Length: 109
Image (cartoon, rainbow, N blue to C red; front, side, top):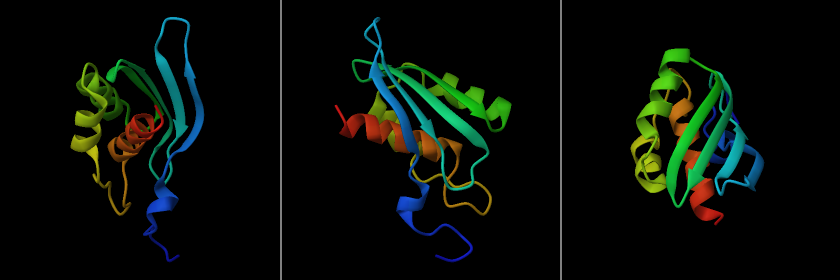
């Protein structure tokens, strides 16, 4: 692999937790990859709809904005809108990493 991440697998987030909480929410915690600024993404989902997203690190206003915009969206709609967004010279971004986490949730029912 060269200087830039050009291997799709190298930018897949690392899933740390995937559990159903007592209140019925599915909670997934992931470590973003690909050189993005955020260090953690937490997602809460119920019945295929995003209940909440929280980023640790990253551009504070942007990650709060992303979280607010996707709340109440279906997993597939949110994932599709953010898929493939790059940041700077990276092949991925904080929104793209969230998209990848959402796709993980969709595929691991």
